[in-house]
Length: 205
Image 1 (tube, rainbow, N blue to C red):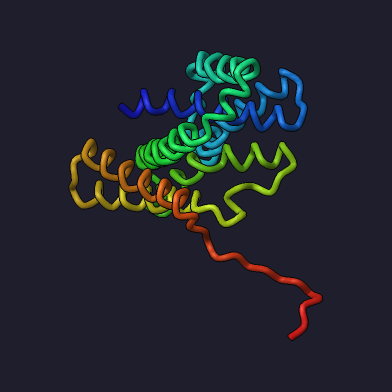
Image 2 (cartoon, rainbow, N blue to C red; image 1 turned 90 degrees about the vertical axis):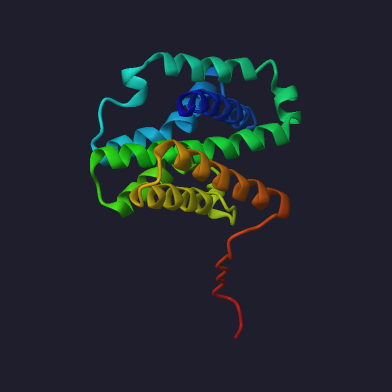
């Protein structure tokens, strides 16, 4: 189930990244690069930090073909993909929590501290989007109040605590994904946001 969800998630991430590249008039190489960074950047950064090799796309190069293929297929379908906003938001929410659970599993396999297990999950779920926004010269979405990294963090904590308390792994996958996905959808629908810090040196007391 996680493997299927992983492939669906990286396909969706690649397509939404292609749209972001298109809005900045990038060439086809740029479209593919932004798609690869977005879909695979979180897992790559996690593996580098945890010294976990080979990287997913090095071990399975066909993942690169899938991501680039999805990105290039988005070019002629850009208008349609752009109109399917909510389906892609829902799939993106699913991808976030799936990536988080996968990242936590890699952290557990690496035998790192529990805090780092949670961080590994959050990096897997969010770092690709951060890299995409940086390369597109945008302020990363997760720094603008979106409950994105927070949802990933909560999902990772629930998953790890369940496992450490003896809950079956398959059951905890379902529970963590269900809770994380629901939180992300509620945040989108109800427009929940993190409090913002606004500082202006010219503000008068």
